Every structure is written in C-alpha cells, then in structure tokens.
Image (cartoon, rainbow, N blue to C red; front, side, top):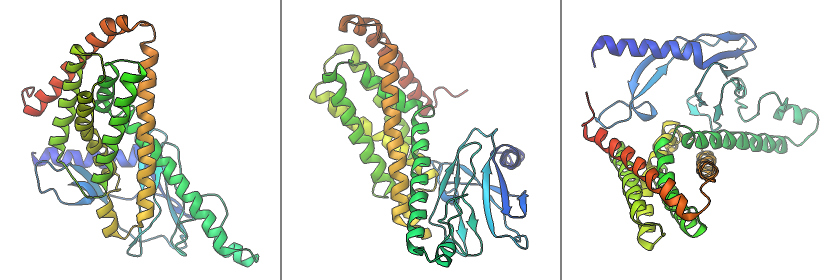
Length: 346
C-alpha cells in the first residue's frame, strides 16, 4: 500500500472515532477528546506478520488524568452504526469487566480511585456505603457483580445475533441452502441440529485455542458448502445420512468464521488469559455471543418459512422455490469461490 494511502486511512480512522463513534468522559470533570495515534495491526493489537492476518486499526492514547477525576466512562454516539466494546487496563492489570455498547448507550463508570469497576452505572451501590450503614458489604458486591455479568452477557447476545442478521450473509446463505431441501420436520430438523452441533463445536474449539483455520480456508469452506448443499437440493428432496454428513463437515466453517468475529472483540481465551482476565468472564461473554448466534439462526428460518408460506404443497415448494432458489444459491457460492481464486479481480 502506498504511504500516502496508508496515511489517509489512518487519518480517516481518527476522524471516524472522534466524530461518529464514542465520547470520552472523566467524572466529574466532563468530556474530553483524546488524540489517538493509529496503526495497522492484526487481532489483539499484534503486529502484522502474515499475508492472511486479519487487518485492524488500533489506536493508542496516553496522557495525564485531570485533577480531581474519580472515574472514567465512554458514551456511544447516537449517529454511530457500530457496537463498541469497552475494555480497560487499570494500574497494569486488565479490568475483568467488559461491556458492549450500542448507539446512545453509556458504559459503567471505571473508578480510578477505589477500582470498584464492578459497580453498575447509576445504581448508587458501592461497597463502602453498605458497610457504613451496617449492611452486608460482600452481599452488595456480589449483587453488583451479578448485574455486571448479566449486562455483559446481554450485550454479547446482541452482538452474536447481529453477526448473523444482518452481517453474516454467508451464514444466512448456508442456512437457506439447508432450508431449501424441504420445509418438513423430517427434512429440516435433523439438518438444523447437525449444523448447530457443527458450528458450535468449531466456535468453541477455536476460541479456546484448540483448533484454528486461516481466514482463506474458512472462506473457501463456507462458499464450497453453499455450492454443494445447493446443488444437492436440485437432485434430492430427502434428508439422508450423507446429507447430514455434508452439513456437519461444511457446517464447521461458519463456526470458525464466528470465532474470528468473537476474537476480534478481544474474547480469545489464550490472549485473555495472558492478559490476566478472569476465565469466567470470557466464558460468560462467549455464552452470550453463542446464544445470540442461535437466535439469529432461528430468525433466518422463521423469515424463510413466512416468505415461502404461499407455496403450500410440497410439489409447488420444490419446483417454484427450492430448485430455482438452490440454483441462485449455487451461483452465489461459485461467485465466492471465484473471488477467492482471484478470477473476479479487475
């Protein structure tokens, strides 16, 4: 990449963060504008070393904390179109609590004095206050941690759903390739179950650091799976043993794609462990993300059923929906493969 183009992209990132992403606040002194220095990195702010490394922009800022500041928070701007993950390091140690913010949402207050970052925002609940009134300080702390955990899980659930609808178009195409075999319980239910097992297994194995595939292999696998399932739909309408084998084998690849998306949020187990984050926090985040993915899967199937409700008979569904729809899906898959081969390059 030419140096001028590189510099322009980095400057664009700084403008994007400043104008459309988040506002930064020291409490009680108010809003401030950090001057980030951006650079190109891969996941977890690591240097780019391989051609297949995912490319990210990482911004760093350091400066003095205003006198009298008690806490720090961010606010997602209403005009923003992306979710924001709030991660922090305080006094050299990674803060165990994380939070997902959507437009107009405000993060918890990170206490810069007492490090009571587990207390949710705007609750007025702090351990010291409970102790002064003769209450159970440990009980209050436990309540705050429970609220914190549920808030984080819900945020990651929303992220998981969005990773399928509307962002995961390849995931949705794979689900539709299964759906077009037939809408009946005997045709659809075994495939959905096999797919859930396959992509869930791949997601957890990758996030836990046990198995990892390069983005290129994953992209090839998803596109190939769409083609294979779609072509098979043209020649058969029954869910056979070999059909389930295809769903399981190719269903692994969407799981690896989801794992890459989760890792981009800072949720990869090995990196989190190295940084000192609590395993329970990472597991709860992954559980929320995973649940959101499955809700997205159900949403895709529900919409597909509603859209094709007019084709009441199995024969009409097959020849008016399944066969032509499968041909279109196969073409999409072939287009994806051609892109990977570079045939579609200008």
